[in-house]
Length: 456
Image 1 (cartoon, helix red, strand yellow):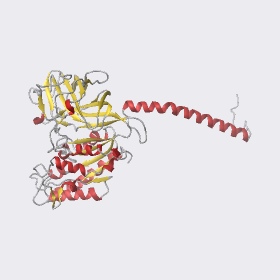
Image 2: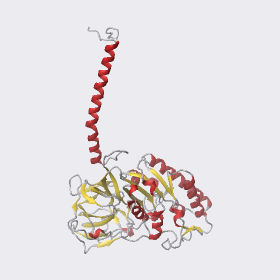
Image 3: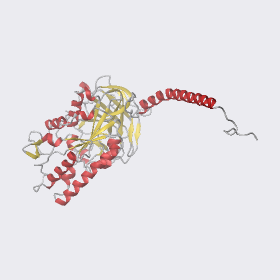
Image 4: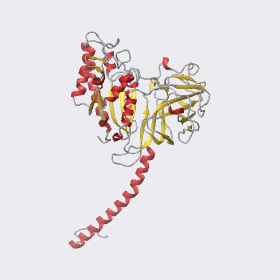
């Protein structure tokens, strides 16, 4: 039997051993450099094609959400009007045209459609994108020659499964930052249920018309509705310096009191400010709010702790999160000392949970103070128990260090002479929601320096 060589059988000189060691190291180093040269371009190409987030300092392009709307189960009063809603089906043989305002621009886009609350499959027969006529929001006409067919795995039609979302194929389509995009969908079969996914508080006009009009320049016979349906996201393929800030909120962020088709919610105003300051780079602003939403309990839409993964952590390119929510939790809890102590404690614990979960995804979290509601018929109580809760929550946001930074929206709109109330010129008449000037004041209170570095 042949002997296996070992140090006892073969004893090379010290000089020979050193020479062999050096030769081996040089060979391994050469192989490693060669492998890196081959692998790095391949990984960069995969990231650009698949939408993987670009690491800090990378030159790879990546997908970033440029518009989004929080999916909700459509309430009876917000369903499409007849004949578009039937007894057991909705949007049968219907074209749906809607406009959305994007944040950042790009030359390559993709769409997401949501069936989050559907209890039957959602079949999309045809989808197009186009530029709205004159670049305006809420119009039924599109620029001549601008419609482009959207595909899904190379096909013109697709089905969104129950509870799921569907991402379209990437397509070449130029979008300017802060511009409006028209998305038109046709559903030949409709959805065989009335469990429809939508975002009712669109503050933007959409259009419904029977038959397939996805490629028509205008829909002059369409029925106008001020809701968004089915569409949940628009994404752009963009450079490594682009990132998104998501905002978790309620009706104050959804824009109650803002102008229909005016795009003057406070998140729109924040986008305008960011675009005026090139030092901030390209920052997308994602409005993930809904009227009546709460942090702790379901209301209009799932509670924040339940929807955080869906609406923020899974969105493309999010680097920052602003949490501006809690007024509805305080306002709907009983106006008693015990109930308000409980909701205050639970709100603070929920904020801490949001921070922990967002930090795990590398997202910085900014806490926005809650704005006043003194004088509001539903939330203001004579004994001031709810106001005491609001003040305690705001004190925690400002002083605890629980958030990465504080955005003091309360200070921006409260009456200096009566801090429990909004300034009379800034609300829409109910002492809770703001008017366009009030939303401008909220946006002006957000420090832009918070968004100057993706790595924070």
